[in-house]
Image (cartoon, rainbow, N blue to C red):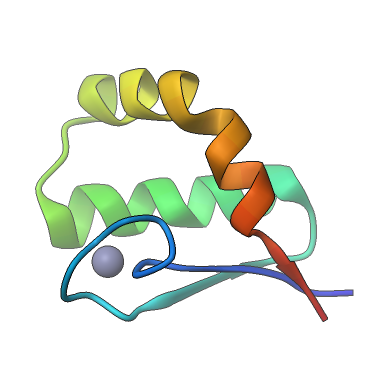
Length: 64
Ligand SMILES: [Zn+2]
């Protein structure tokens, strides 16, 4: 099973990058790397964002 999140579903107006992972942990790690590299988050800002929006993130995870 592959878990994925699309950046657009996560609330970004323009980015349509899809992040993948085999576990939720791996997916969130990949999303974090993408957020830092592409969207200019610092690790601290990202962790704060995730802790606020984890429920939303879980809802938009697609399982294929
Ligand atoms: Zn993105």
